[in-house]
Image (cartoon, rainbow, N blue to C red; front, side):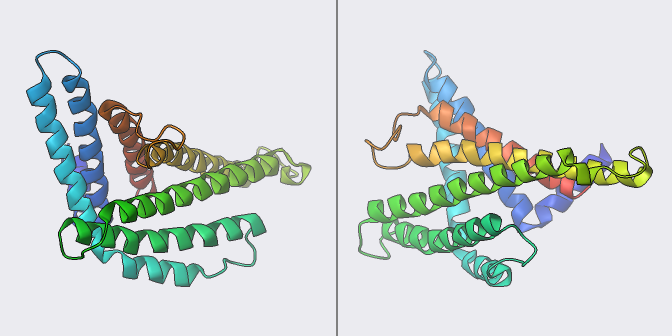
Length: 237
């Protein structure tokens, strides 16, 4: 129990760890609140949880005001990708980084417009930021699908077989590839859940935009958040 508490405290010391917790709590509140709102006699409790979810979402929006520099450094470091990477992965990653980089200023302008700091139409900028987020997620899905296909080909290829198929080195190499496949599949599921929500937040008339009830938005966001938390926990050992 103390080890788990220490791990949680350590995670919360970092910005990314705290953001994952706030995101998970926010979507969980939206899920439970949305369910309660649809039940007779539970509207007040549900509304309170939805209000908490909105506050947590606003908290994350304000914290993202300071993310541009970190995103720029990451984009610059990645550049056009390493030469040994697959060309499709490199192209999709570069486009995804560009979409992420453009997402932040659009959201900042939308936030500033809502706060009456800038006198512009915030709705347009919220739509634009959501569109860039959706594009980034779509590119991430394409990347994960391609990587999973390539890794599965690698496991099935004759070149993957070694002289001693049951050797410790062979099992270790195969386990590493399988672990990466699992990680990519979790990223894929997380991005799919987020993309469904991103489309929902676009202007009505585009696919299923505006059609999700609050509980469904909360469910998809909770799934995405928990997958992200699990991956972070596994990466940290």
